[in-house]
Length: 120
Image (cartoon, rainbow, N blue to C red; front, side, top):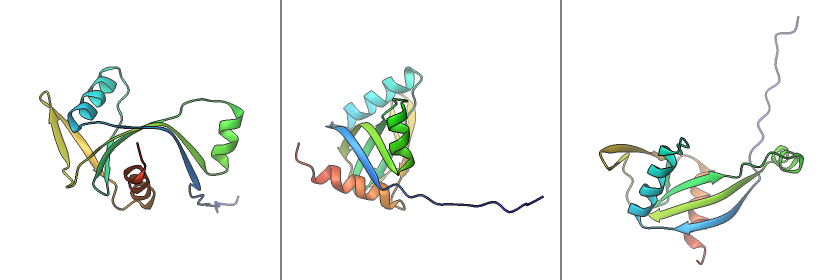
């Protein structure tokens, strides 16, 4: 019996974002609350002075699966608002919403930079 396993790291090579929506902080949090009420909780992310919510692209077909194996990820939407300083929680309607500081992630920092630099 061979107890050795192979471990392979496959970094994401490309992220395709279909839509970006700039919102006020209040609008973004309200949409997050509505998503959570519908049973679709999504974490709020923060990096590079940007608070954002990403919605993955959920189409299960062979072509998307093949692209995923090549390191390509698809995001349907990124909703965002400027937030110059990080805060770990935000309260809305008596509910505390956690915010994940994605500063350690090169991927999330790059996404935040690209979204901020994109002309709307």
